[in-house]
Image (cartoon, rainbow, N blue to C red):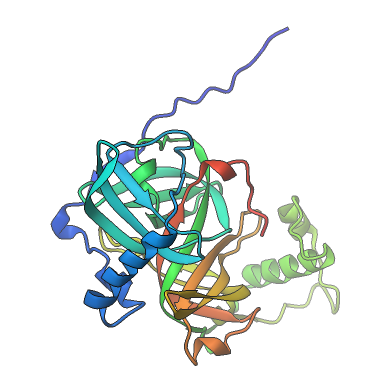
Length: 322
C-alpha cells in the first residue's frame, strides 16, 4: 500500500511597506459618519471602552504582548489599537470604524501592503476562481504574524459606503455578433431549464443547444444587455488606496442598526456573481438617508465603498453559502 501526501510549503506572503506619507489615514472614513471628527471621534473612542471586546482573529489562545486590539460586538463599531507594556495599555496607535459581516469567500493572501507604525494594512487576495480583491484588514494588528501563502482562508468582507444609489438602467449594450448572441441565449435557456443552477457541463450543452422556437437556421435576434443589472467590482488604482472601490450589484438583504446613535442601513450586496464561482457578497453599511431608504431587496445599486476584510480562526471550515 502506498500513501501520498499533498504537501504545500507555506510561507509568509509578500509584504510591501506603505510609507507614512503615503498612508491616507482614516480621516475620510470618519467623515462618512460625522462632519465633526475632532469632537465626535474622541467621544466615541471613550464610549466604546464601556462595551469593548477582544477580537480573536487567527490568534486563538495566543496574545501579542506588545499590541492590544479592542473591538465591539455590534454590527457597526470601532476598532482601537493600543500599545502594551507589562500587560497594561500605554499609548494609542490607531482607530477606525468597522463593519461585521457574515459573508465571505475562500481565497489566498498574495500580498500585504502595510504601514507598521499605524498597524494599517491592505491585503491583496485571490479567490479560488482567480478574482483579485483588495481590502483593508480589520485584524492586521493581531493577525500580522499568522498569515501564510498559498494557504486558503475563508475571509469575511464588509464595507462602508461613501455613497450608494440605484444603478443606472439606461446603460445598455446591443450584442450583434452571431456567436456571442448564440452563447448568451443558449446559456440563459440551459440555466433556466436547470432550475437556475449552472450545470457542470454547461459548455458541452451550449455546443449542442438549439433555439426552442423558430427555425434553428434563422439568424438570432440581437441581444440587449443592461449594464445597470450587472455585478461589477473595481478596486482602487492608487498605491495604498486599493481598498477604495467602486462596485455595482444586486441587493440580497437589508437590515438596520445604529452607530453611536447614527441610523445605519446594512445592504447585503452581490457585487460579483459568475458561473461556477463563489458569489462575492459584501455587507455594505451606509448612513441612512432619504435616497438609500428607497432601495429595496432585489434592486441593483452602485456605490463607492471602503472595502474591509476580517479573517477569523473560528470559521475557517466555512464555505460561502450564497
